[in-house]
Length: 313
Image (cartoon, rainbow, N blue to C red; front, side, top):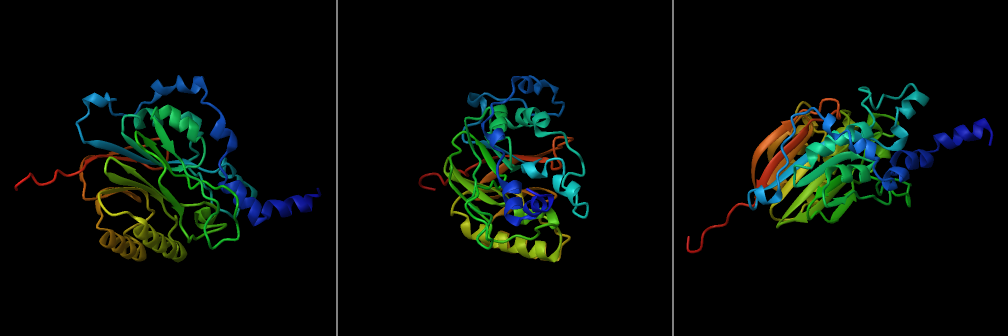
């Protein structure tokens, strides 16, 4: 193959789509390295003490949500910006590889009943093992979104749920995006949402289009409408990286419309990350500083279904 033909293949949208969004096969199947597991005690963050299930208050559930910035394999080491200097850096902080960060993330997250991760594009087996949760669900989609020509290539949305009674439910990609070789390369990812049912309530994990351009804000507005239409009735907890900011008028308008339509309220916000709920009592809301674990702090809370009226009341 000539240099010209190799370059042509590299620049092919189909090749880029596959390279950017396919889960790393080795990461999905290779067991965690015992040497990595032994580094758990090096986590210096103020982590919650682990509780035995019997010691937890009956009917109370805890949730942990974090964008862990473990991007698709082709982003690793800023491959695209290194090849094409005019593209923005995807990892300006130069975070350590996930295998160095994962033991600490796992140590923190295992104290919670439900763990919701965003940008968990790779190493999902390692993350599952280190959190020590019984079940995990990291969906893949058959294509980026209906508006693209790409299909039949499994793609990860980077979403992952772990915990007890976290079984696969509904998961879909958003139908819109903004940015192929700019604005966070969002069109090469399969951003969307996942919904699971647990103990009489639904839990939703999502990650929306990044960036502040007009196109990014229009894409997010459409994604919010799609998510609103997909949400089930009844008690609900929604967590994730919404990438919305009140400083952007279009974002503010679209997000307020989303909350009004769904009946969700904001329980905890840190930048673009949220814990939202409906018909659920939420308490003990906290933000855990991420340090060098990732570029997003973690959000945590406890929640329970409200007690119904007493008989004869």
